[in-house]
Length: 267
Image 1 (cartoon, helix red, strand yellow):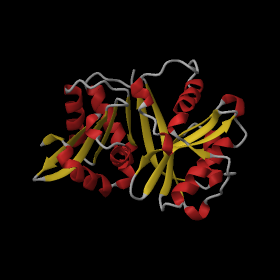
Image 2 (image 1 turned 135 degrees about the horizontal axis):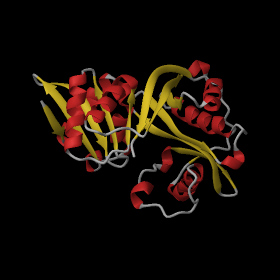
Image 3 (image 1 turned 90 degrees about the horizontal axis):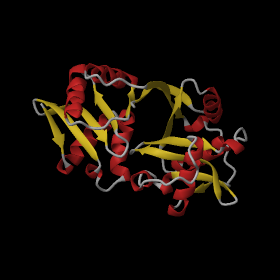
Image 4 (image 1 turned 30 degrees about the horizontal axis):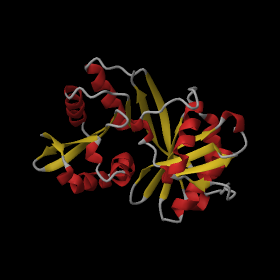
């Protein structure tokens, strides 16, 4: 049986997610980053004999489906329900073993990805950490949101100061950002975009094109690692398998590959 979960099911969701903590970082993080994630997200549970066997989440701010279940039958049921709900879809992001059956079931409904990116999840053993921070890195504040958005626009080939809708500004949690600045502008950054009891997941790593190949990515990532290691978190991040410069940078910091991931984009 499939049913939509509510705020009353918060602990049920977290208990299931923590059974496979590293697979459910975004789900767990949705409760860390928001006081009321049910305002934006839809959580579905699949039950047999009173036991939850799968969790499906639609992240409304990102138009993203993330499913976690061992059974293809359960994954198919989640996909069918989200399609029935006519949710706009931009992304499917999950570990390969969950993402591929999700993508195949969406194809059954005529929904075909425009692009599929294969990624690898890396983890940083504390004893392998090679710290490249210098102390110049700063933790973001609300005053940095515009500068963070400008850098993102530049990296995506958009006008730097184009108008940004309120819902996109709301995606940014500035105190989870670590920045390098020059003359008041953010020239490099990295953030935490997933967090749980034992893990902090790094993302949003970018360096302004005029400042690349200077080691700034390693600096900002190192600063994040130091901060969260001090808070007893294990550090992970995803890297596109064809992004060889990033792979070299992260492996020099001490990151090691541990699992396969898929990021599918839809038009």
